[in-house]
Image (cartoon, rainbow, N blue to C red):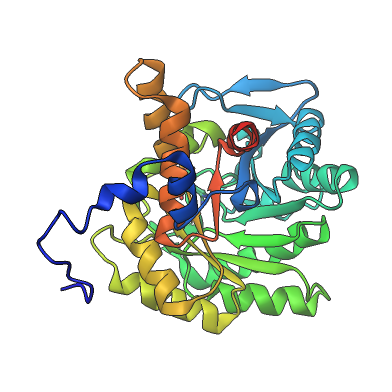
Length: 335
Ligand code: PBG
């Protein structure tokens, strides 16, 4: 029961008074969305001048490094704080041990170096997980049909150092192995990379909403089975708090909830329980379904996009990873 239980006399209390004028609505609004809240998630491919559309994500392209750098410059110009980069690895380089992930000249490392050289003040966030590199499509090493935790963590710690040495500012492990935050922190510190941050995908669910992402990086066909032995059960929310608590204790600087819109309750609980920088990921499937409805004329794309991102802010997100970041920055500037 709310403490401010109003008298049942609507003639005295008229909620619509505060909604009557635009200036009044702006004055009493509780949260806002700004370009500072946006992280632009992007896919990078080999080649030069290459831009290939992701068919399940209209408006999203995989970009070669030169075009990625152009986009990074535009992102910086409009005030987007950071990019989150995901590589599309040549299937010929995918192996069961994902060893290409440890190559300091792999696609993601070259992309990071190029973006940081062009835009030193733009943040670069890299994903740590084996799925772009693994012929099994899993985030870790598959041993006897099971994604082996500790063996995976060892590889991921080396992967994090390789990416950080390429210039990545924040390492974002999305693999959901146990104990990887502590292992990555130790590995980074031992490599003299103490100021490289860790953004933990702390509450990451085994979700059907990642489908278009797996199309985009080409891991869908490769994936054997599902990721339910390491990603969380969508039924659970107390467990998310435990995951976040562990990752913070292990040294995470920021935490993330993923997916976004269907998990705003988790976002709210995490933000309220810990009060730490909390990000949310508007994942590929969220983008795809809104975009598909808009392309059919069933939703207003711009309004539904802004409304969904505002909902993340209301639920407690400090920042949101979204494929639409650049477009949203334009919409916010035009307001
Ligand atoms: C891989 C990873 C995934 C996403 C980000 N990092 C997919 C997965 O876990 O299968 C999904 C992002 C999206 O759907 O937009 N570790």
